[in-house]
Length: 169
Image (spheres, one colour):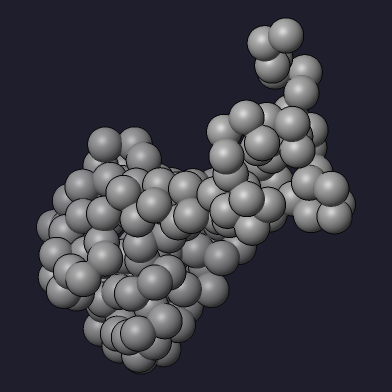
């Protein structure tokens, strides 16, 4: 008889399920001539390849990765942008502009507590970053901390009365 999808199990004979993928049953592996070790490794290898393609950043420089994160964020793929920015932040933990970029992406992803932390860190490193101060005010408002958010935005308006975008926030 022909093997069917019901032959696939969620674990291999040793109870291992790397990556949460469905593994072929022993019968399916025999039919495909896959040794147990190869069958167990396939999901992990496939996941690594997919991750590399999705991120598209292996071997790229900082500026290229930052541009890719911005493009992804602008196109609505915020989760991928957040992942790229997190990788950049591991290599450049003191980059205030990167912290600001992360704060924006995290806010877009609905992760406002994390966004606030990154924006606060950016302003600690560079208190003159007006864009980070505006974004911090917006995030504080999103967190229900309206008075604090308005205070941040008022500081920006007092410093730069003609600044666009602040009055909308």
